[in-house]
Image (cartoon, rainbow, N blue to C red; front, side, top):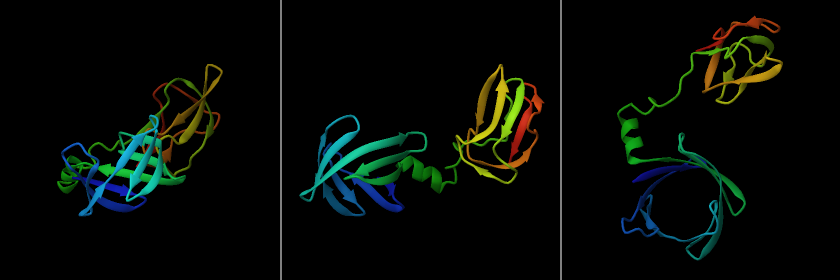
Length: 168
């Protein structure tokens, strides 16, 4: 059994064990004919309807996928039986990355601070621009967080491992 969430609609999917692309979605039987056109594109037939599927992006850590089906974008997330069991036991967020602070990776000069206290940030967001060895370095968030305090100012010289931003 697999739980799949696609564009905020949840489906319970159960594949037959004989290797065929058939099974049940929300207790309704399905059967699929699928042809792999390339590593990221497929042609699918279901109930005599044709679908062109393109895989846009896959994040294995977050178990998410971005698809285009007949040109329409879809976002999905899959939960295995183990994921569902861990969630039921309240152990589903142990793998979630938490960050407490952003430290300067090297000595340098703070050129710009791109966030302010109270900002909600996402993994990959640029936080601080640090000049070191005549190069501008964008320091980014390693995980989602909320900015608690900023311990640096623009034009401030900082040392390696100095705490620049503290997160909640």
